[in-house]
Length: 410
Image (tube, rainbow, N blue to C red; front, side, top):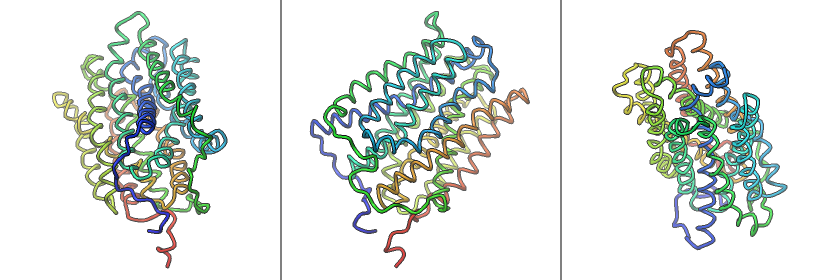
């Protein structure tokens, strides 16, 4: 490891007022990044009934943001280079608010348009938060990665849990259930505003730039990281879109099914925090990949079996494996690279290609059910994805770099 290679061992965080304000801003942005997505699954049957749309079209409600992630992610660092990371994140929160409001304002057209716009906004947060953390907390990357991933999952779980009850509470139904999360985006923008006012335009790649990295498209390791990122996203977004509906179809009422998915989200929380810290202290993360795969198979295998009496156990196992795989995917961007510029390039590649891959999951799940009329084939998609995730993880978890440093070549 050369002198420019960062250390990922957590050091004590300096809790000055300015640092606390910055940390609070990062946390509130993270609060806003998943709740607009996880609130959809528990009310998807209401949306289908109200707007007379098919399961395949309903699947696109989760897929559209992923397509936006894939399309926008490569452009985000360039935009941030011009106007700064802090300003880019603030504008993204405003777009997120507008997108959420539009999604709940009309028929199918506005539903789709608003969903795409909020997907564009969330893409900025997905791409910029890791870089912003790396630039402002270089000695606490594992700790801060764990903190903001926990924050994402905390409100993702809350949104999944209250979505169906909110839809039942008023005559606005699912529109209120999805629209209420605009308030969280507004609060996040207010909390973040001091960073926009006081900070100069920041370069997206951070204060220290290394030489231009070699093309990552030619690196098998970069593809391993990319597929690991994409396949764990397939698991999460397909679960968010359809597992509540599967549980409802098997006899569970909608509110309880929403809270079952909320249990998935809350079970993720300790592992999204711990795994980045643990992974940062290991040279080789393949053991973590093996453990995550076993837990994935236990949870989704239980759901596939149809044993509803043990549904809470299956949800907990699904949450543990999902949280651990997401935290590990976030850390691979720094663990498998030498410099901030390389990490940014790998993050852009993995989030662009990975989310494009993830976009197929909810649509295929809904289409398989439309064709067969049963959930068996659709649930089999989860098991196939887990095996592919395991293979990608074995490559991504190996102690290598996408671009070897000079000491590796000597």
